[in-house]
Length: 256
Image 1 (cartoon, rainbow, N blue to C red):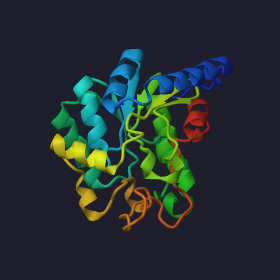
Image 2 (tube, rainbow, N blue to C red):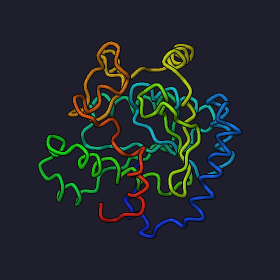
Image 3 (cartoon, rainbow, N blue to C red):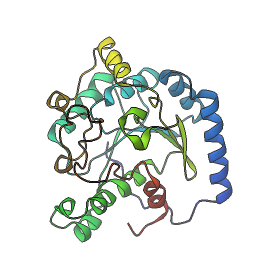
Image 4 (tube, rainbow, N blue to C red):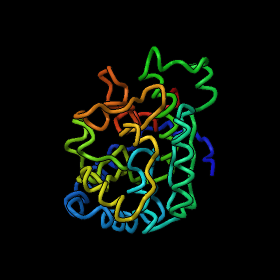
């Protein structure tokens, strides 16, 4: 299902609401952050009844979270960001997992065509400015994708990179909640779950791609390096921005 593009609200979120969400996120993390991922998902679906989604890259280990969600609610919206630069294997994997798990509401968001024409007319912006490329192809579209929801699940985990080492299960993003059920899981937990449930693996993993983004900026991971080292290899960049403050800013900034 194609999500209709819509402009984020231009008004800055009320500071009181943001503070309230921040306090509740801390409270939820204290109450539920130690629970199993499945329990976190169940409690979150109950808490945000009808106002929660999941974002998925359909990447290296996306099957784990998506399977857990499908066990609770196969109709939960799954927001997929199609940057226009994905590996063909990623798009095929998305469709295969949706069929495997019976997911009924895959919402595809894409970059704004007018913005691409203005900022990246030749489609090669990643060669000169990866931050600007991520802004137009990832951050702004994802802000549109999650804007209708009060909360969303992600598959982020602490072990993936040093920038995620203190990741909480429940976070505040402006007036919304971001929930990371797998935050405390390691590679062995993921592998055990994949085997136990005989889940389909992203075919790129066999070639050393342990974190999968856009094909121009993703390389296989070298032995001994963290799972995200193949993203923007050779650069100081470790995050595209959709899990940083850029997403919150994009939700209220129509100039992107």
